[in-house]
Amino acid sequence: MTLWTKETITGDLRDLPAGMQEIRTPEGELCRLPLPESGGRGRSEEIRLCDWATMRLEWYEAEGFHSRHGAEPGFLELSFCLSGRMGWQLRDGSGLYLGPGGLAIRLRESCSDSRLQFPLGYYAGLAFSVDTRTLDAQLPVPLAQMGVTGAGLLERYCPGGRSLALAAQAGVAPLLEPLARLPREARPAWGLLRIQELLLLLGALEQPELSSPEGWPRDQLAAIQAVHARLVEDLSRRYTIEELSREHLLNTSALKAGFKAVYGQPVGAYMRELRMREAARLLRESDLPIAGVAAAVGYENQGKFTRAFKEAVGLLPTEYRRQNGPLRGKQFPGVPRQ
Image (cartoon, rainbow, N blue to C red; front, top):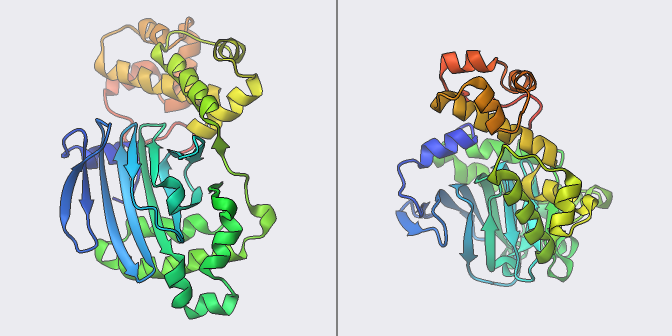
């Protein structure tokens, strides 16, 4: 695929049974395994780049699943988000979240028993696993010339075993996004080149450019997820931030910051997009009058709904229903592509 949108991911995974993932091994073999605790679907392709690095392209349509793997020391895991959002609930109970263009850096041992979450219901990304000990024993000339070592990167980005999520950094997306569009046979060579460039880039980043870890305690994560469940259970209802704060025992600042960290948008923007998507679905799939569609997504005033829908989709509700087609990949203006 060249476009990693929710719609293209759903289309690509449609042939898989629910609760199943398809894995392509470095040897080119295909196998299907259950997605633990999930009714979703997923695919991943793992490519061995060299003795010290592997690359994985993965895409899922799921709410999340439990992940267990080896906890070998000295392995650096780098995850780059192409679209959607991904979060880890780590062994210490904290959470780490990653959005489009973001890069997560962590030790393999810190996430060997963790729950992966996809707050938007889908995710596509690239992941690199770097054996820093083997890297330093076979240090490529460009890294040696710049003084970049695996041990140095571990000390800089994962002191004390911490995990770090970097917001979109200049140079990272242009470096990695093309890998996901390459033919499969071209990925090993380009992947080896790009992982070296990425390590060079990480070695050159100035300390002030590093963002704070987006780690959230377990109790705050649970409260934020409960807020989300309340918001989406009935789109005809509207809640103020103050109401949600009182109900879930969060101060308003923590609620707003936590919601954006987990779901990628402020509460208001997230709910506007969700309401417009549901309105579009109802216009396509039901015979509700326009006023009924407006009420179903929380608009008492049909005129306000019509203006909001036109601003989001580019068509009046009546025009959209008449065309009776999907959004054809359009994103809502003002809303980042997920």
